[in-house]
Amino acid sequence: MRKNFIDAGEIVTTHGVRGEVKVLTWLDSPEMLCEFERCCIDAVEYKVESCRVQKTCNLLKLQGVDSMESAQAMRGKIVRLYREDISNDVIFGDELIGVEVFSEGKKIGVITEVLDYPGNSVYVIDKGAYMIPAVKEFILSTDIDKNEMVVKLIEGMASNEN
Image (cartoon, rainbow, N blue to C red; front, side, top):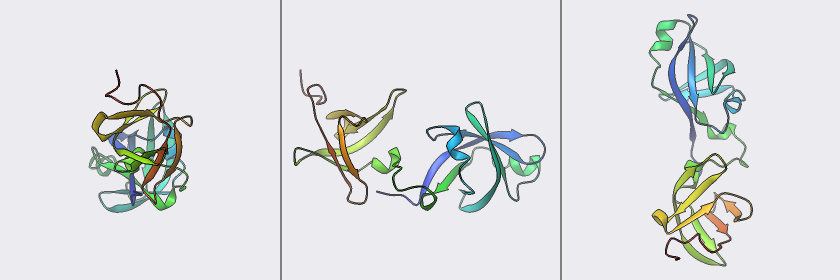
């Protein structure tokens, strides 16, 4: 199910004296956050004045946040992106929770968790009944609007297999 907002990261500290905040990014890469012109924090929309990558985080300057004190008040807050600003081709793990999974025309379950590993994500079906790597070989199609995913199962993906 498509969401209205995507959680992009958490403000972990301030940077400098002009109101910049340091964001620990939860996206695929910190560079991705730099593509957006606005964000939402605590139901308030902010225009992004600047965004740059610093190691694995982002330094974000938001319009209206102009002092170290106002930036400090944002520590611990979640930076959310508007889903409408993101291509429909991009699907986030949170949007997959609850998606019905089919193999060979038969429903095998519902995605209950998405595990992120360095090589690829793994979709957990029905709390561990199936573990399916998120790679093209096994994920044949995904339609968030229809709440459906079609997969190819191989030996070892079902937890009840010996």
